[in-house]
Image (cartoon, rainbow, N blue to C red; front, side, top):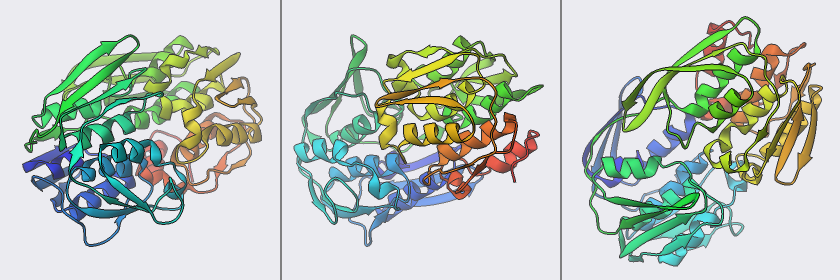
Length: 406
């Protein structure tokens, strides 16, 4: 959506995840001057004008943390002023991790309420390239800087200590930009020369591993189950959860490997499995940071202890996901130890029978509902409406597989 709005010409998209976050981003791109049209189920057409223009009203990103941070990066490269805002949850999320480097490039920010929190007014244009070294790998920060770098003077670079997801780099190339990648130990250096034009293209979006994780998890923990999810992205920087499940003894098979939209994809089948606890390598966190909640839910049914450390980033997602998962699992009778940068789950029988506080977080809600499918007693969540943020149709799909979510 964002690259299509920045590009010249028409971008056709199919297989789009039409969650609330993506729809909020689509509205934002349209507010910046692109023509955006839904042409069918998961099919969209974006006609870009070769750049963003000043919007007539506030850019409301709803709950979309990725959306607002990437949009700020893209908008920073154009001579415009725009105010970004979001819902109550998004207003609590830190923004300086993105606005800091963008300010170093020449963008100006006027915090409307509290510093480091939305709403904020951005004034862009006349950017200069920077060499930015991240202390913690973050695809959001990297992507925002690269999008700004497209319209900056000079060569912009981002160094990551560990490799984060590289979808933006792949997509930039699909739109005609040259992006350099240099291996640096466990991480890499990504470089982009400013002044490169983007040209609209066709994009087939692979299935999202983060969404696929939920029905696959249900297949692993509900006795007698077998679930196949087709066309799942298998980018090696996104498959940390699947690797971890296999180490836990999961009966997880991948077939029909192929390429779609510039990404490796395949069909994944999960069968009910006897799982065992493992120590998840801290270096794997960047490849599965959004999947730790559902990993914790499956670890509750494993034999032994599952240790998840080096995941402090979970505390600044839509919620403090470490604290909420600990609270929810304990309420369901699971033994959990909370740490500053992680948590430890001791598996066994799961009593369930609790109503879980989700703090408007879609992944907390879905993870506990999946937990409830195999618990001794039903598990309830207090705010299921937020699931539509990333997974519209979640309840209907799970019920279609044989679950019972009311």
